[in-house]
Image (tube, rainbow, N blue to C red; front, side, top):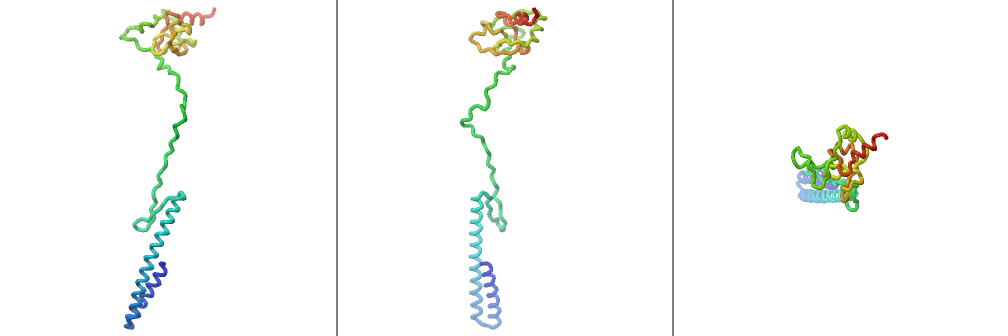
Length: 199
């Protein structure tokens, strides 16, 4: 349509020049008619081009390509692609990892209630008295003992104080390092020293 409108404009200019030169009114009227037809052809061509562009943009958008539109000066404007964030599903996946057993820092006994005192809960057994040299030997053994979270003593597995409690098992060296002291009821230091010394 653009080519047809350009040809009609050229014909209108030639007819206008001929009409003015020859003083012919019919040529001037024909020139005006050709100019109007050229204007109509330009409008129709512009609308067809716009419709074609819109169809192309819609089909490109359906195919997954970026949709474009024309800016104010006729240059194509790219619409930005919005990134889609992937979020893994959480329904029905259960625990990702089993809960961890308590760490050594959680097993640390509660501090004594008063400053500088070795007070323990009322139902806690007394501390087994051990000579310092024997305590140093026990503090290096890897034999397992039992401790109760928040309580200051370590025990043997058969200690009656452990009934109805949930003890944790750890090497005696680690229990001593964490601040636990031997229970006077089951006397773990005596038993551990007897097992450690050669007979």
